[in-house]
Image 1 (tube, rainbow, N blue to C red):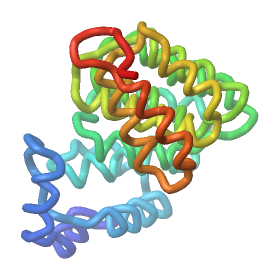
Image 2: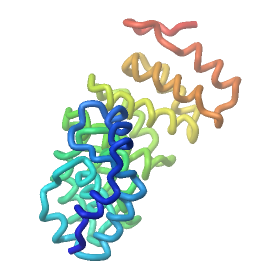
Image 3: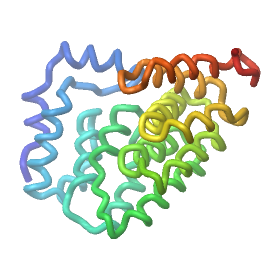
Length: 233
């Protein structure tokens, strides 16, 4: 097996580690390897002996990222990828590891319904990052006419007070709006949606260059008063 730990150490940048630590507050063990380099090392592992690599226990943030990328991309059937994903979810404790893992996860068309159902069910976990994985995974791979209602329904129905879950929900809503503005705008009017998620979603949508100014102004009027369900007109 390739010496991935040596490769990580050789590419570690103390200044980048300090920068990353500010973006991922509270995360220990960041040595400062840039994401493109981590992806390149992951590809080398996949081409070498990825099964042996997965026997190792990650010792730092970058190794956790590597593990996620290898699980997401190594050649295996969907049953095994889901099994390995289930164990890896216990390691994910920050937005960066979550989002890079979800973006990279291979979704064969023939297994798409099963994969969607698996990730959708993570909303029932009640844990911040499993719920974020559920939304970001579906946003990345299932944002289409068949699934947008399910994604939005879950954001309306499920709540978690974790900041990074809420940010993930707002990010997902903003992407839903860009592709499906009418149905997404109707969900933003639903009083059952968390107020903070609603307002942050509107902020993200209004920051997008892909949304016309007339829509941004209409959305601004949907911002909610802090602490109640009344729309600000």
